[in-house]
Length: 401
Image (cartoon, rainbow, N blue to C red; front, top):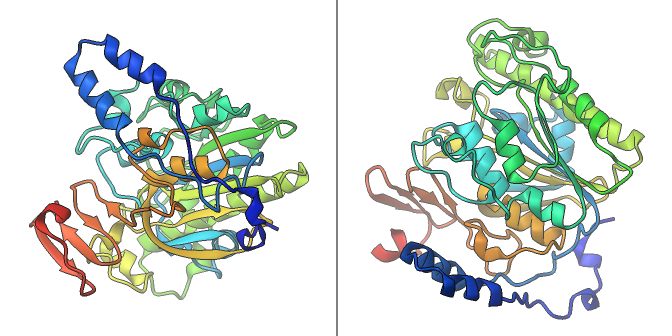
C-alpha cells in the first residue's frame, strides 16, 4: 500500500538536489545575444526545489495522464459517476484546484499541463508555437528515464495540430481519431465515445514495459443545448432532477466519460498492471457551453464569485494508495514538477513556472489568465485591481502585483 506515513525515514537522508550548471554557464558565455544572456541568468539563479518525503514514492511505476474535456466539480458525484468518485476519494484529491481558461483553452491548457509554462494571454499559444521543441516536457522526462511514451485523442486536427505538437513535445507516438480507427462525425454536435478511446489506447500501450501515456478526452465537449448521441444517451438517469435539458445533456456526456474510466481500470487490471500504474486526472476547463446559472444548480457554491467558475477536479490515483485530501491552491501548471518528483525523475525545477505540490516551500497559489490570483488568504481581481481578504493577513502592493 502506498502510504508515506509508513515509509522508512532512512530511504531519503539527503533532500538536497544538486545540478551541475557547467555546460549552461559555458553556453551562456559563448552567446552574444543579450536577451539569451538575461534569460539564462534568470533561470540559473532561480532556487532549485529540494527533495521531500514524497520524492520517488511512485518510482518505476507507469503513468497515465488524462485531460478531462470540460470537466468541473459536477463530476464529483457518487450516484451518477461512481468510478470517478472512487478515484477521487481513494486517491489524492485537491480541493482548491483550478483550470484557468485562456484563449484556445483546451490546447493551451494541454500545453501548460505538458511543459509547466504559462500560455500567452488571448493567444492560441499551442498552435502559434507548434514547431517549438520542449526538452523539459513531461514526455521527455519519461523518455530519458527509459519509458515508452505515447499520446491519444479521439478527434481530428481541426482545432489543434497535435500530431506535430505532441511529437515536438517528445511523445514517442501520437494517435488521433483516424489512427485509432474511431468513427467520428464532422458535425459540431457529435463527439466520439471516450469508452472507445480508452479501449483503442490500451490496444497500443505496451504494458510489458514501463510506459507513460497522455490521453485527452472529448465526449463531454459542448454543445449541450442541442440533441446529440452522447448528450441523449444517458438522459434517463437525470429525470426528476429539475435540471435544465442542457445541464442534463452535459451530465449525460459525463456519464460516458465515467464509463470510460471504469473501462480503463478494467483493462489495466486485465493486463495485470493496475497496481503499478498511476493515473493523474485534471479538467482542461469548466463547461463554458453551459450558463453559470445551470452550473450553479448542480453545485453547492456560486461559480460567479472569485473565479470559482474555473474550479476543476485534480486527482492522483493508484489502486494501492491511501486516500488523502489536500487543500493547496493549484492548477495544471504544477503537474510536471509534481509528477517528476513523485517518480524521482532527473529534472531541473528551474525550467518550470509551476512547482512541486509536495515541496516544503510550495507557494499555495492559483494564477488566472488575466493575472488575477487566489490562495487561502485572499483573492486578487486584476480586472478592477481589487483584493478580497479571507483572514487577517494583509499583502503589500508589491506582493499583490
